[in-house]
Length: 362
Ligand code: DN4
Ligand code: BGC
Ligand code: ZN
Ligand code: ZN
Image (cartoon, rainbow, N blue to C red; front, side):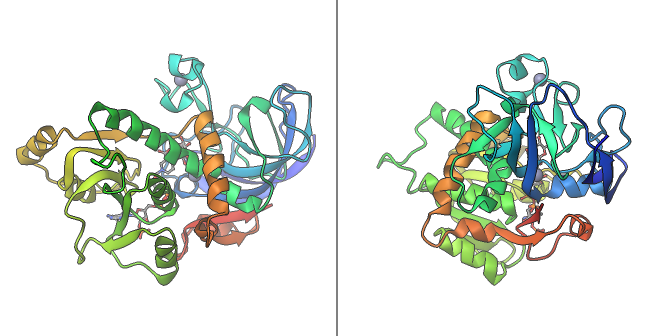
């Protein structure tokens, strides 16, 4: 049995170690991959601190290799119908379809029973990508054609979440005319709660729609983050002491904080859309009254949850990241705020204050 080094936790209890494990060879999985960069996020940190109850180890293992955000190089691949060759860069998908009807049509992100039907690399029942190398099936890989600055492509997985959320926005905003009387989104206000990596990627995408984009948090923003916000022509306000826009057309939450979400729902415009994306099971509850319910009803407000994304959203993510790579000022590259080696496991325990996206170089 080949031994390889990997970053592992024991799910759902937690903990982290960088150690040697047996390479799992699945004779059906015909692509041998080497991660080049992996990203880490709150999901990994919650697993490691033992706060993600739905995570579990692969069958027959007392650990799970963590990591679901990766850009990898193909070391070896057997003939396949996806036009992937040795040496290519690829992004592996997180969620693997089960047998429900949504999974069977290629939409495991909309799985009808995600707690039982799907498995997720690095999260639920399947080893993730933080190991020297691993095997996967060609159908789980998305090829990156533009090999320049491949580091940016480690953002593909988090960006696919944004692509799915905007698909939901497109669908629900069809029920009435959402664009302005000039046929564009140029006078529409999009407020994004939070200033982490997902919030920034939402801001990049809302700018693609040409909306007025406002990011917000409960404290002021350090200079580095302000530079990125200015670089994409968006704005920031501290909602504790600065004025917010008079109205909001599209509200996107990445905080998972009920009180903050309600504060902003009360500012949604007629036919407004609220996408809930952030999750924080530990956040305290909040008050809302019949007046709030009447407001939501009378304004035709849609509140939609959005989780994960499907293969087509990975493709959209690759397309937009490639565009953003070449944007003047290349603001997207500043989203990667630290590059670590696999043995620097402390990075999984504590989020640095200046962090947007921390990355591991393999
Ligand atoms: P993150 O970097 O922790 O971002 C969360 C952001 O929310 C940070 O900027 C926080 O600010 C901010 N925040 C927290 N509480 C408040 C508040 N009360 N008011 C305003 N802002 C607040 O995480 P991320 O960007 O990686 O992911 C964002 C969220 O999406 C997380 O909750 C993830 O669990 C969730 N997520 C969902 C999916 C999915 O549905 C995938 C990935 C992530 P500060 O406290 O850091 O200053 O598929
Ligand atoms: C990933 C999603 C996944 C979710 C829950 C997130 O970090 O981006 O694809 O479904 O975790 O495991
Ligand atoms: Zn993640
Ligand atoms: Zn399913």
